[in-house]
Image 1 (cartoon, rainbow, N blue to C red):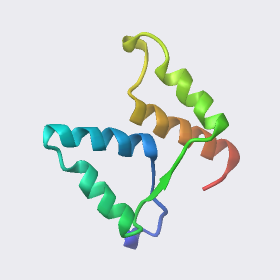
Image 2: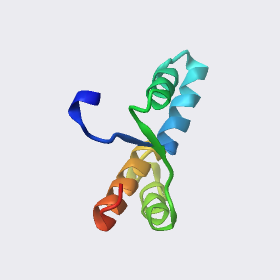
Image 3: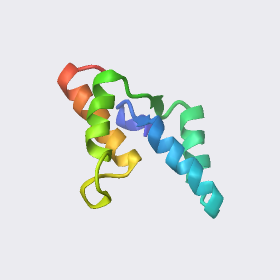
Image 4: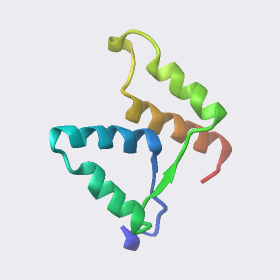
Amino acid sequence: MQALGHKFVIVDFVQAELEMGKQNGRRDADLLNGLVADQLFELVQLDGAAMAHFESLVIGPAISTLDDGEAATIAYSILKEATGRD
């Protein structure tokens, strides 16, 4: 990942979903935490505008919405694209 020369980010909602997977014996949260500790991934949070996008993707009937992690990733990406921020 370091060789790619790109900044990798992960939204805190994704981390929270992976943490919940520990209850089922999944180790993905531990792997992610290692990547964050090694500074290969940066943990980010949604702010006001991104949160509005997030809510529009998760509120409603289950068949018409996304899970939190996917919705948060899309919302962050939309805001990043619109604002040009990292």
